[in-house]
Length: 248
Image (cartoon, rainbow, N blue to C red; front, top):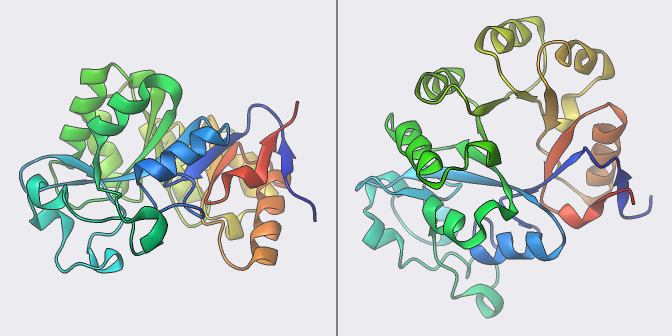
């Protein structure tokens, strides 16, 4: 199979935590590399620091990055000095720092569509994420995603005008019922659990179906990309965003 895979212009190529196959996830280097690749959509993970700053970090624990403790148990002045790149490459990325959502918005403005996952456990996180989106007037430039349906309900109450995507394992009738009830914009199933029949049903309920979970060995990744495109998905998150390209 040859790279890149070509897709129609409407297909969302979403750099997963930035171009995270090539640079440390959720860092400025990762997001900048995605932009340099011509990607205009990025996925990122948000948590709430102890002093109520919306920070961009995937792991609830800091173990992966070489530190003890949990993001939501620390203040921003503690988090802001952490080296978030050495775990990936000490030579290339030792100077990478954790970002806040507002830092990313200030840097890139409306150059990106931001797929913002509510990752942290703080009940106040949705409030602060919505506030920052409103402060920057980015309502049309974000999609809020979460595995928790209850959290999406909370966001709907706070900001009914925002587009919402529900991260799920697979599409079934219960998922479709809840998605329709809440008026979701996206359903986001795992790439390895896609099938054409369920996508057809989903498209009668939501505007878009976008996949997640494209990972594994090279051959497995190729197969998942091919399945995601051929099944009729409207987009996917991917660590290798340069492996998919829009048709001329």
